Length: 437
Image (cartoon, rainbow, N blue to C red):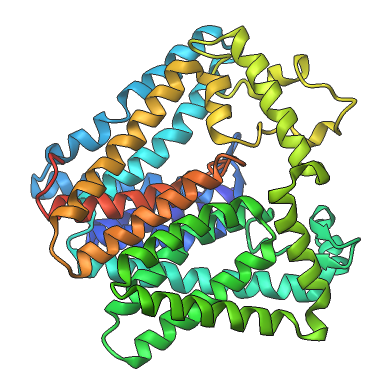
């Protein structure tokens, strides 16, 4: 009974906040995303899903009251049509239709966040405020991650996180509130580019100091997550940001040299030797993957995914049916079963397996449309806050999409993070009147 009352309170609270000011619903999403937890109501639901349900209800009530229907943003929703259709068609091969329905609902949540953000974010200043709040929450979670690293593996074992120890059990990977370092890192790389683009837009030195220190804390937590996929995703995104934002390339070279020198100097301190060795070992495996067990594991994942794809190439095995079918294709003598029982460690391969070539095509077309709208708006806008925010969101999306080559960062309600970033960008594009949306 208590759990049901809590669920009702979350739904009604989110609905009331959104009804009062729709963009406050986006603030609520930014505040609560990292603190998602499961509730048992006969079936397992997550608090972020309840918040989204409340936001949707409050939004609809407000739309009825003001007679403002979201018809202008229909292209944003319809861009996901082929992908959602492919997920439904994949049910023809599924053993469990409830599993398909659950997976369709999972993706609908992300699309709904995008659609809602397009409607609710009134202007660039509101988007900036939302991102500031999002950044503040991320700083708190990052500090928690730093503390987890400092506390070490013993504290991690006591918390049931012994899997994330490195350096022969001497170091603990930061995982924040996400319970998994790669998921934590995927969250951080969505926000770091936004902090970087807001720094030049700060009104005074205090804002610059807050943004700069916040970005450094997030970067430190990202390093301590030891997530190579996130490092690989963020590096080209930040490099692209720097090339576009810094007009004087001489200043860019000087800044890069100074940052590299400071990094080398800091890393050379004797107390940081174990950390330095662990980071260098992780970086070296990106160049030479043969020496790392987890990268060999991902090669096996690729071979397994291709074998499964050949069995059902068009509509896949069925959305949400991966765990039911993986046992037939994966050699359990090569790796322990828990290492692969949830997903194939690549979002694109996961979609290919579950929804086939039709599903992957629909997913890429959906993302392609959203990115096209953002890029077109960026090039047509004059320099200013909206243009800077669009640049940061494009960099965030690029980093997140690259990271998903090596992992699945949309499990549970995690796709809402990506949906929030894309939705804020599409809202800016719509407000600039450069899209059909």
